[in-house]
Amino acid sequence: MTTISPPPAEVLEARKSLTQGQLPPWAQWSMVSACLVVGLLIGLTTGFSTALALVLGAVAALVVVPAVSWGVEGVRRAKDRLATLLVTLAFVLALLPLLSLLSTVVDRGRHRFDWKFLTDDMNRVVGEGGGAYHAIIGTLEITAAATIISVPIGVMCAVYLVEYGRGWLARSITLLVDVMTGIPSIVAGLFAFAFFSIFFGSGIRFGIGGAVALSLLMIPVVVRSVEEMLKLVPNELREASYALGVAKWLTVIRVVLRTAAAGIATGVTIAIARVIGETAPLLVIAGMATRTNYDLFDGRMTTLPVYIFNSNANPGARAEFGLERAWAAALTLVLIVLLLNLIARVISRVFALPTR
Image (cartoon, rainbow, N blue to C red; front, side, top):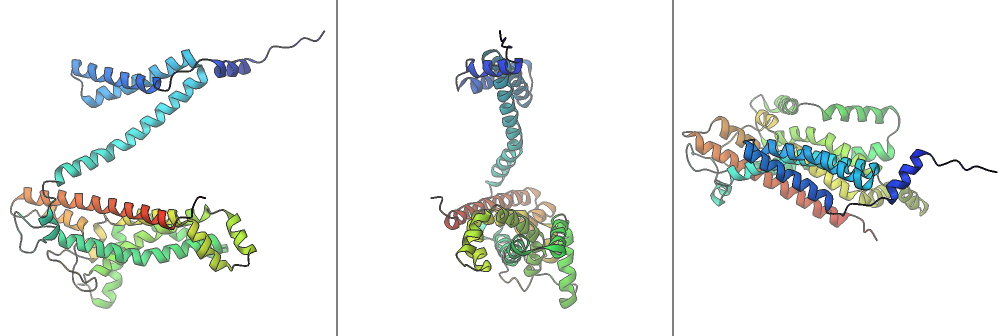
């Protein structure tokens, strides 16, 4: 007579976890909300700060939710819910500094953020009044020039590394890109200043020098982001194009770059956001001005980061007016970056291949 051995304990536990009851969809977050409310009530009654009360509520939720799930659904679902809560808590902790920053900038910058601030410069202003029109123009022109310099170089370098690069040259370019990614921004400004001083003298200050300095910081970011996007393009698309007799260079332009257009637009936007807030290199080579200068190749130009620094360091006759201008300029810079991100999303939608 054949005896059948009972299944192992692991199999029994797995069967039990698959057949046990489940909490309703709203139960987990209801328990989390209840723990946070209880934490706030304890904080109000004991005098704890709101932040500490929320921390106590979050810790309680990490204990209560897995415990209830373990009793109702089994150990597997309890572990899953604990992991979900930990990931959500990490996301919230990462989001809090951003929300705090945005709320502070909006709260302090909205008082001076008006049409007069956006259309006036700082020529002959030492106290109340003035604006950041010259800094806005300088930021847009210098950043646009840096983008025009950096994007073609970065994209072509990434295409070479992914599609053509082999051997020691490709490895050397990769190493140099990695090194350029970590150089301090002030070094880029000093390089641009030393380079242009050879031809124009040590007193040279102009906008195109700032664009060259920023392009040194943008190029490695563009190369890395575009390179990763090109690697995500399936090889089947390239092989299908080659099978139809299309040349490699045309395949890269019409298939590979077109497929990766959305990621490339995102990478370029990240690169622009990386440099649009730089101050040190522009102080070295672009200088500081109080009036509007539209010419990149002649005269000093002010950007919003330099304007913020100068408004804080040299506020004028009364410090509160300079600080108000600094916060309003910071709000303007945040809005410009937000607008660039929206433009990048539109570009990626327009040039991306259809999903069907």
